[in-house]
Image (cartoon, rainbow, N blue to C red; front, side, top):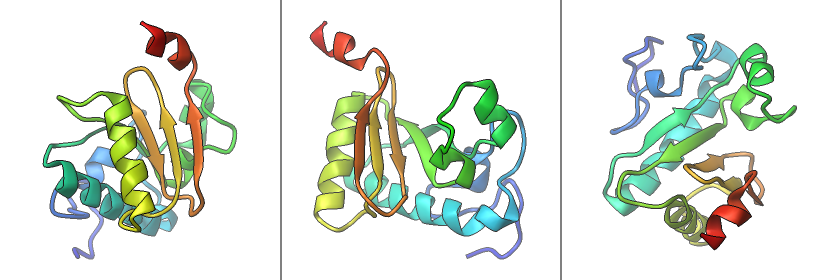
Length: 142
């Protein structure tokens, strides 16, 4: 893997560091580089399985940005261990099902999987946690 830290730095075949930058423009801190690499490696497993590009709409979040958007107080995003994902041509529920199966099969690391109306959250916290985002139960009834 490339040793230098630049925004074009490739983490895996299909994921580069810039995809995980905070939406406020701040870079992933050096102390979290191993976390973001581990996240990208697990997302690569998902990408290889589904054969479709994955868009990371939220990766690392600075504590200031996380607070600004009212993120979870102990969000895995602040440790660069989480990504909110969109896959064109798949529903968030379909993406979640693929991740959960890959975790069960031992191909992706155990972690948090959250289902939201327009995206799926995955993190590499090391133990399984599942949840539904705000409004998802109403959305599923439609």
